[in-house]
Image: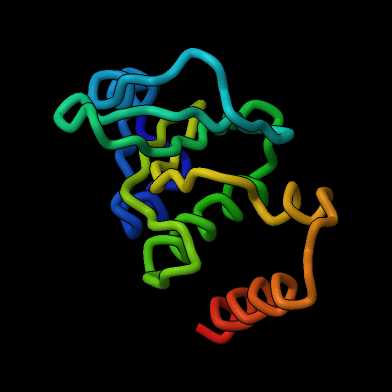
Length: 142
């Protein structure tokens, strides 16, 4: 049967074939074997579209196992927000796949450090800190 959240899924143009998202996304993208990051319910992989092997994207793979409806709804909200944003300091959203067990979010991949890693290095000059703050404020203002 269809996914439990069919109204939200259809609203956001998710692909709601039960248990098919994993199969579909692996047909469309070539994944690197090891994840580049992870969270409580997710792993992030680098991948390339089969049709454009020189393009590298990031794919956040989330398992719904152990998630509450509130968690799943927050993922839907994240996708909805990402899909609407178009700003130079915010990653670009490409597409999503969802089935009964998984959600996959495909975004652009940005090479380099994330802000948390950069802050841990503590190598900010006053000018560097001002530059980062300016970019953050610009993105938040957007």
